[in-house]
Image (tube, rainbow, N blue to C red; front, top):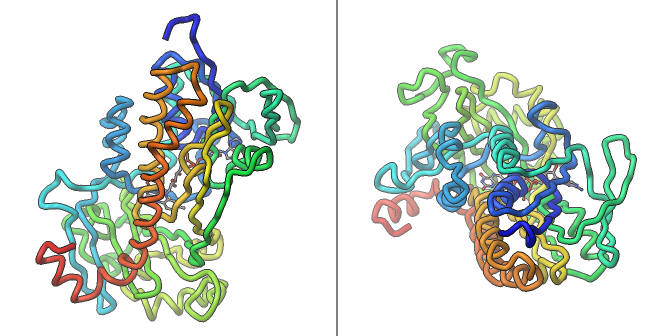
Length: 398
Ligand code: FAD
């Protein structure tokens, strides 16, 4: 892009998708200002609020390759070759994702990934403004109102706005108030809580299972572990330093087992002794984790419209938050960034056309993965442990 046509983009949210989009836009010559609600995690420490680690799959990896960041990210990731299914009788077996290591997924720390993307974006020339929360937008005046960490507000010009501010997007709320977006949020009715398996060195040897010869880890590290139990499940993803992040998925309300019926660690430990007897001994800080970690809700977001002509656009979770059972929310958001950066680079001044085209290309993909993610919850918590499923899988039918 020539200096004369240099376009300024105001991006709301410097999370995973916002930071990756910002880097690509800056690389293509855009002037990019990112306003991020939280303080700079590289100085203040990372406080993500959502999952501690994530599964990075080929779609997301391809986007990182386009941005020139794949190798850097993979150096900080743990390869997962398949699902390690733990049955109620304490047995486990690996169901590989592919015939060899060309078909694998990767476990990455949300905090480490976010910081790497912030560094890369800054190197590309992006200007970050941390501790700046979008409060409201005046789309007629093309200005936005921001609040700092002390609640002090100011207004700035923002001709072209992109909202990467996540599932609870403030930009989406402002756009919806100006001209309804056809928003529909479908709650799953199930929720999650995170717990931790520490590195093997922190556990006594009688608690350890089979770590596949990897002394640092309490379980086989190169797998996504699942304890399917029909209507609910636990999963665990490895972290580079030897720990695993365990996520318990349960109905939020209603008859046991549900989070409402397991209000504290004492109730939950009794439930784990019954349902996950092999997992409980691997979580020595179960009581602290259970009582201090929040219960997170899970929903799918559908919008008829992702943009307000050429003035504002939503991307990533702000446009299409999905349930996490295909491990594809971030991956899908990363794919968005590649499409949008390429379209904007082609027609930097024609944002109305670009935003419409972006929605036309990406919306069917986003809703396809939303449907698959909902279906996969049933598969993960139920069918993966079903002997008929296993027989079919062995025949290559699934
Ligand atoms: P976010 O990550 O939510 O980032 C939004 C950013 O905007 C944040 O930095 C926030 O501070 C900032 N912000 C918010 N409001 C404002 C405001 N008003 N002003 C300024 N800034 C603001 N996806 C996968 O691909 N693989 C997985 O394995 C996976 N596992 C998951 C597990 C769980 C339990 C959950 C809940 C989600 C999981 N996801 C996974 C989905 C993934 O977390 C999201 O798709 C991804 O974080 C979306 O990135 P984003 O940048 O759009 O939004």
